[in-house]
Length: 313
Image 1 (cartoon, rainbow, N blue to C red):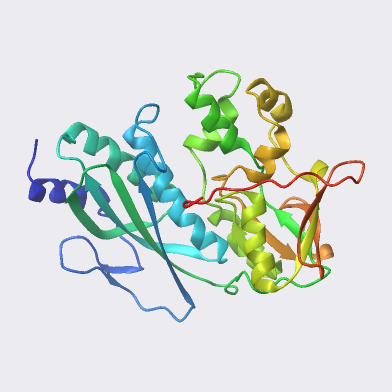
Image 2: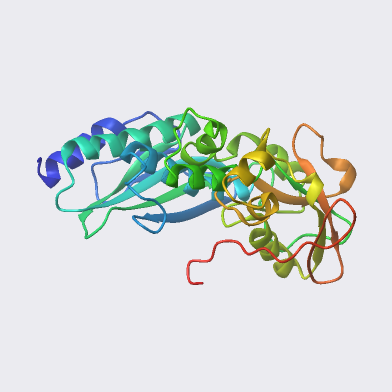
């Protein structure tokens, strides 16, 4: 097993990339970022073993990839583009060099896919594996916030919902990654922070958040911050092909996963109804003056309450 300094040098070599946003990267006490005239957005996210992930059915590469995407998703939710990142790793004493290389490969894969330079970080020993990722970004169009939804706005979401939650359930049950749940498992193991559409969303949206803790819980954050409510239509919720049937095979009510399942990392936003092209996002409801959330089925009947993820519940 290599020493701390040897591991840091390995990390420096792996993460070294040219970038106009980074003046000085790994190797000093601090990273130095280039100044920008655009509004700056910063975020930090932590993934802790046996809270956010389990090594019993995930590789270190998959763990690190997901951790990086989860952090970068917050930049997308603000309408930003990511410019640089910091990665702090807390490793168990017996964590091998091979496991570290696998972990670093996941971070490199995610960072390179998003074209983000890892400019620094930290390495420490801990009782369990933990990854703390900070991502820095800038907002070329405008900064999207949670407190700006307006009555009459539509409620929109990019991509599909529920897949990551169903994929996690399949993995926990030992389903193969290339079996009938392949698409859902991929949504869990290989999420994509929606930086690819963040700028387009920012140009039309009045407010936004990313779907990390579940649609209902995340939309409640927007409604409460904006002092509004919303009504959603369950039949409008976008989902993967055969999602309902596969969810029921695993013993799940499909709407529970669509509304309460987290870690899809899609963008949930409000915007004037006529302003959002269909190829950008799906309209799933409308913002109303009456506080709270209401979810109606195809017949117009209300669905029971669905809770999202809460660290301390």
